[in-house]
Amino acid sequence: MKKQTLNVILNPFIRIAGMKALTWGALGLMASTLLSWASGYHYHGLLHFGPAPNPAWWCYLTEHLIVWLVPSMLFYLGGIIFSHSKIRLVDVLGTVLFAQIPMIVMNLIYCLPPMRVLEQITPETAPAQLLSTPDFHIAILLSMVCLPFLIITLIWMVLALKVSCNLKKAGLWIVGFVGIIGGDIICRWLIGQLY
Image (cartoon, rainbow, N blue to C red; front, side, top):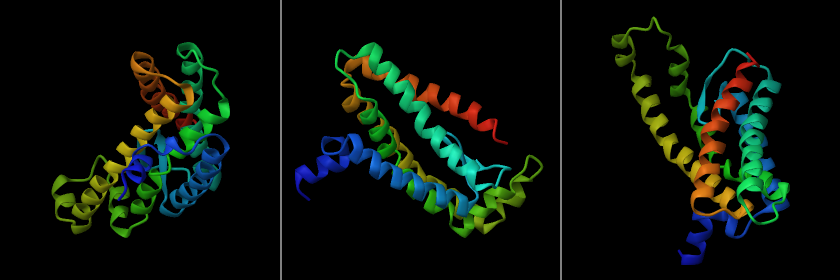
């Protein structure tokens, strides 16, 4: 693999931004929404994923829009405050949405039958009962396979912020932290209103 191709995989925003990123990201959002609806798993926040009581298709779409728009707006506002460059909203929206494409793999994994066992867990479920279920062990392994895709998404979101807002050093990390951690908290609160 050429070094240039590897660089584009590690940081796709070398080549993609603006409307192009927004278009690809919108396709990813549609695919991710459909897969979430098919699996029955919801985005509870930017960093949280699992079952929820509202199976309506609009709930899945609303969750995905919230998970995209909240960190995008926090990044945009942070960029306006910390960056000396002119910031275009379309660049921020497009790169943040494109950065969330790796989460499609998580949606695919949660469509697999062994993941259904995780829906059955309640506070009353005995640990011995879980450990004796073969699908539980497979579901845990599959959940671990999801972790690298969440990490890639978070790295890409920081790179999206860096490119779209031209931020560096402390400004990049402050806005990135507020956009991701603060965004997750706000997303969880907003999405909680849907149930």
